[in-house]
Length: 272
Figure 1 (cartoon, rainbow, N blue to C red):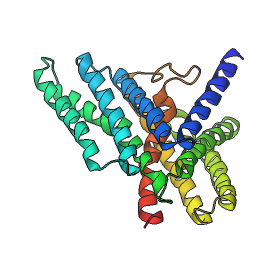
Figure 2 (cartoon, helix red, strand yellow; figure 1 turned 180 degrees about the horizontal axis):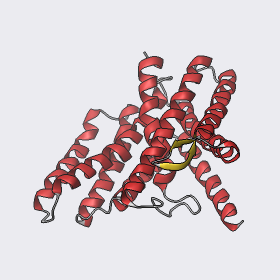
Figure 3 (cartoon, one colour; figure 1 turned 90 degrees about the horizontal axis):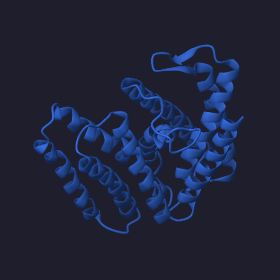
């Protein structure tokens, strides 16, 4: 009971902070989500047991945070493309630094270093561009809906899977996930998207429908990817920053893959 209350309170605070960050102002979005990106990279390094010098780890975290902020400023026309030059310098320093680290397997550390930047910072940074794809000014609706769809999908999948789940979705990676849970989450999100279509006319009903399906499928893959990462390195949770929920990576795993998927959808089929 105590754990349920703790989990519920943490979930409420988490949802409130994410919603406020997206909806209040684009600069608040940049600030809060850059902190999230920094935490994601920190937890990623912790899971893989990165053994390099601490300063390289911290520079990687700072670089990912900068990438997100730079993307927000560039997407909002606050600055030009040269905002990315400092990040390129950071990336070069990260790569060259391994030449001076007298430890074995530098190529693996290079690979994990670049993967951390792309997975934790690059994919999430695409969220910065989505608010401007249906409006010339910052419109928080599509980004907020990504998270709303993810939260609804998690709830629908959990309830349906608990009550009816019999056929495993991906036994090798996530033994508890079921096809029934996946279908239940998808049904809830599709139904919600059609309801949203009645109130928010920025997208047609079928555009909302496709938006919902892409989010659910990619979010499920994102969840499985993080499960594979943790299973590979023997980690139960990515961290303890969210009591009752684990780490930030545990909460953002779905959004990490949903972000680029929705970005591609909006870029190819909505904006154009």
